[in-house]
Length: 156
Image 1: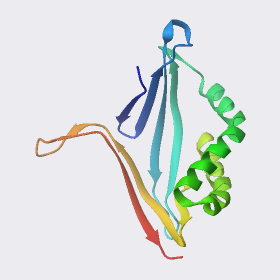
Image 2: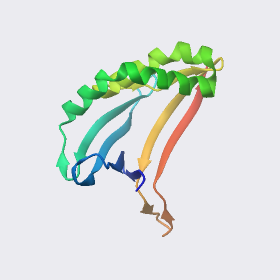
Image 3: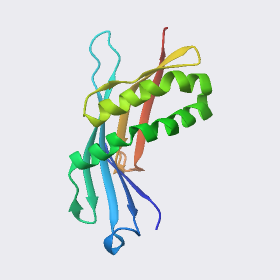
Image 4: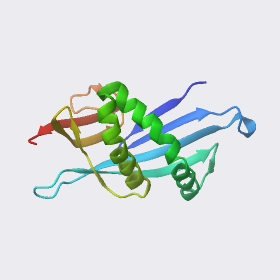
């Protein structure tokens, strides 16, 4: 059984059956994501919150999960750097990896973080992140679950 992703309003749940867990349980994590309203003249910010972690039906304390993730940040850094290098070049990856790690640390503490990153001599800003569950529109059409990202270029 492969990974499972479920989108509900404002939340993403990732789950997988782990054959190494007792009874081959399903491990799941639910993360809440929202865009915070931007103050006048300031960039929009996002807030990510670890909403729930379960092994089977048993909840796992969030502090335990966040502590383990915090200990592994040094292992995560090379993966982030490689991913950024693949898509944006090694110079960009070297410059931006510390900033992305800082954003991850803010997210782990539930603190807002800016949605602005330089890219190719431009400054790009996510102005909205929305996660929508499957729903029926006013016209009766079924709209599949989706993640909406609104991106704009801002003057440098």
